[in-house]
Amino acid sequence: MMVEVQSKKLVEPSAPTPNQSRKLGLSFIDDLLFSEHAGIIYYYRARESTHEIHTLQRLHRLEESLSETLALFYPLAGRYVEEELFIDCNDQGAEVIQAKVDGTLDQLLQGDLDHDLLNSLSKFPPPAANNPLVVVQVNSFNCGGLAISLRFSHKIGDMYTMAMFMNSWATACRSGIQEVVPPNFELPSLFPVKEPALIQWPTLPFRKKFALARLKFSGQALSRMKAASDASDSSDSIANNSQRSRVEIVSALICKALITVDRVTKGLLRPFVCSTAINLRERVQLKTPTNACGNFFAQITTPLAVEETEPSFNGILNQLGNAHRNAKLKYAAIADAGVLCSVVADSFRELVSVLGRDGADVILIDSWCRFPLYDSDFGWGARHGEQLKPSSEVGWSCG
Image 1 (cartoon, rainbow, N blue to C red):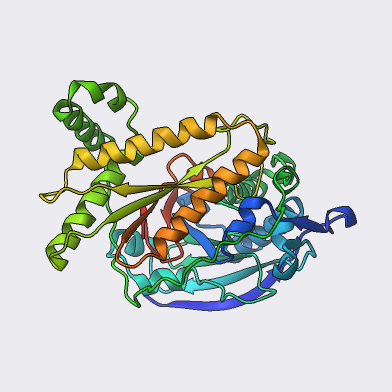
Image 2: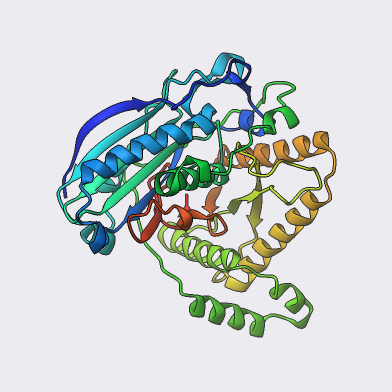
């Protein structure tokens, strides 16, 4: 399946950013993060009723509504000034790429995962100064379907921000910009950078080839796994079992599988660490604005105590579950901005320390289950979201 890029352009906001909003500082979490782009691809099948809508008309409306949305999300149309730790909201715009795919959407969604094809549908911007903070690629298929990819610099937002932006853009396209709930960019003023972060993210030895897998778990299957775990646990831990989430169950299963594979292929009993992100919105006592855009999350890094025998699913599940519950209780008790900054910074330093340690295997798992990723309705048909992370891993991202 070939992907041919047909055009590239910068789409500017439909209205200029006011002078008093032209400079947006970083929050303390923004400063902790690297500036590489994360991303997602949304797949849209064409309805029969939309076949008469010409692809060029849809592309024009996408660009028009994107321009209107960028006027509200004005930092996303700016550029990051690394030396001075701020976003220059200069209205230079987001990059929009239009591409044509020689194939159908069903061929992509129902076929085997193809690393090169996914990269062609959503290319990463090279890490360079003055690059766009947001890159959109609109891929049109022979069947009339679309795949819309969104690349987003981690310096300006997390998955909550990405989902809010995408949903706002879709609403503007479908119903008009007047229906969009305005975003809020006050996190940097509430949690400013008091001194530059002293975190140096290590260069990870990524391989040129990645193993991609699409794993599907039905609600019924997850319920059976939870019930089996409850039945085999001791009575003193059953109280915690009722709080186990789908994310914890699937994460434990993936960790168990990776540890088993590593042990079989390497023949060694190596230490493992699992790290996941926790969204801090509505989890701390500190008041944050509704629709707060930016980065507002922390890391939960859990050393996994692995037995010398076959790793136990229940053992891993209990370790992950306890770590998540303890983290939620810890952040729920924080009512001081300075304490929050310190605790969150420590969570990232712990992850960086583990990533830079020789001999330790690190499992990075991100779940987007609670984000409204399926609400991005542009008005053209059903949505089929596939997550695509910086390492081009699809689904539950596991690094």
